[in-house]
Length: 514
Image 1 (tube, one colour):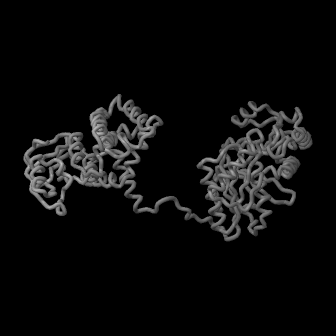
Image 2: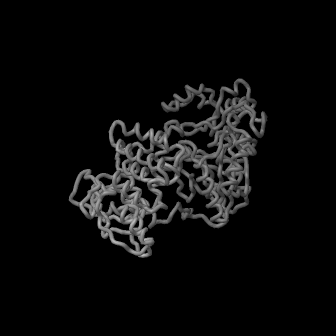
């Protein structure tokens, strides 16, 4: 390149259009300027011509020329098909062929501030090494192996050479994003760091602008880069982020109670954050109340440590509950409710072994215990409450429909024995309600105690042929269970959890199920 004969003309620095090209001037021209004592930069009469196929534009070169301030006259070949090699042609007919050679030229001509070729000789050599190795990144059997090695190398780096973007990154990025094989494997765990590096560039406006431009003018330059550019373009026309612009049908100000019901058996994750924030939003939007309730019905898994951490996380999320309650506070009333359900014939005690019970439910076979008398059930119920040897063999089950197509609705379990001390109540109780048994009952209690005036009938259910099962609180509050989803007529609008198959309900009265 240094021996290339190019015609230049002198110009005043302030009027220089292409000062970055001055390092390429023939040495005798620079010495002549210095001998005259003038600080005169030079520029070519015409910038080099970059010709390429629209089917495979040299995106890396285009980005480098923009970052480095190096002007190139683009001449795409619309009629050209296939992987035609990019060519840079100078005014005297001299040519540079291939992306790597053109990148080196552009980097050497770039402004010093861009540092596309590094700030010292060692960095430049490292960049040259990556440029040479980028040729190996092609589709085929070795592609995944090379990508895994690159990802491992990038585990603690943001760029391949040094702390800034260089043409090494540009060359590798173009090879990677032009590969359809990368689209297929990029989400795999071994390529995590390489994907992170890729996404760093996809968020850079300079990259997006170039990719979008060559995509509009020509063919598909690089697979997922084009898709990403199009996606970002759409996002510019849309509101950024999610929206809470949702209304609860039939809800009125002051008559909405929502609850966030974590089980203190572990730490919160991102899904809990969604549920918690939605509950708070609707409670505040309708001037209602937000309840954080710990559904502590399984002493085998629950600890005070989880309670403390959940409360701390809720505070970090900005949750400001009106009440913090525990299902265990209502154990006595829930057990009384269980007794009444047995007396009504709505619940029975089953001592069938677990494996056989599971098999019977799958095959829609009614348990022999289903025909027990109320007196027998009450006797077995007392054994469960005492937690004795006989009671440990039993489970209380709702009497529903063993022929229901939804297997979860075939006489689900309502109470089980557990002798492990509870983190709040100790060894006071030996029998505990399941989540789906306790949840609607405590809903009714807490909404009633919140002194809201919205205790009017409303039903939450799933689409199917519902089988109703009613159980009554001593004060005659009625709670309904249709298609197995336990809820309450007292709670007019409640954001509830869907932690198992028969709690996945769709509300027809404005209730939001999270």
